[in-house]
Image 1 (cartoon, one colour):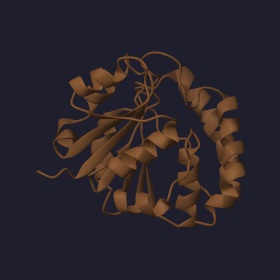
Image 2: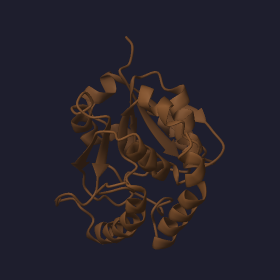
Image 3: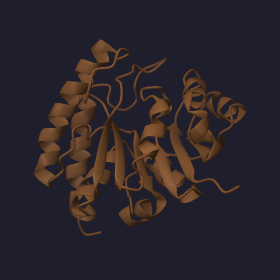
Length: 227
């Protein structure tokens, strides 16, 4: 039976987190999806991912390269991206899939509503980082409530049209700018602010990371707008 969706999870040394992510994906979603763990770990992440039903694809490089490899390898017509650290709740994948026929892009966004399981500290850190990021993104016509989210759904056809170039953490920023340029219809759904289960966030763990992402975006924007 052909899989409708591909769940793409970039990982790097997430042996203490990946089991929780994989076992929290709803059974209804698993039945119609392949799970691709795009991995650059030196720990047991790939072994654990295989044990819990994922196909592991090894890759060298950053998050952007992993996502591009996932897009290239995916067999599903629908692509769901999430992180391997547990900061996004996979249970919301079911809700995201409901909007796939009406919207070009579905984003799982922090800060849209209160959840009982919100991590209060992380919620405030993320809220301020997203606020600063939005000041930057609006200069490029990007109007999203949570432009930093890594919890995304698009079709594979759209992914190919985006012609993504990024190799690092700026991959979502590139997507955002291209979504805006293409005038896509975007649905933002609220998801809780969760703290990663173990270890330190590799993505937006400080305001310095947010600034670095913006600088990288500025450097590459001239190239992206030509595509």
